[in-house]
Length: 231
Image 1 (cartoon, one colour):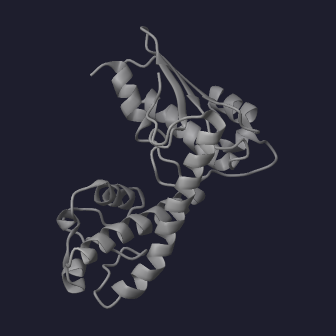
Image 2 (tube, helix red, strand yellow; image 1 turned 90 degrees about the vertical axis):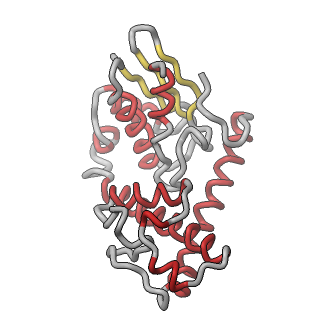
């Protein structure tokens, strides 16, 4: 695998914090170039110039960190294009600053709390899709509740559930409960109907917002849906 391939793969591990989808599949990576000396330049574009600055910063900073962690990378430049706070965010990233450095006097602290909130929402949505698929396939609620994490059907939702649980400090070993509540306790068969009704709303919200973002990006840049990283 070439360095360019690894850079593209690293960008695929960066998720939109609100939508819980990779920035590559969302089409947010407008360009990615890698020089022979290991200098990487990434240009990010978002669906509208008014996308929330905190979300924009998180994606840009995460992209920079993901690529910079690769061997053979000498430098990383991540530029947020056509955003109303792009100049501030780009300058902060260039000098190694955080979100507060981008907007001095306007915000305090890190974005860790916001990141955790959206990871929790994403986990609920992912679990809801897994649970709904199992029940739709005729698996009894008691069997679903008894499943371990390793028993969940293979696929992106199950994989991402484990990843999110690890990031949130929740039980994430293969033998841990497959579906859990927000405090990490296993969901019981009796709890599933009520939990699933609420969880579906979060899942639907993420899917709807994701579709809207793709449509806005298409209108703005004329890019096809589910575009991968473009060189």
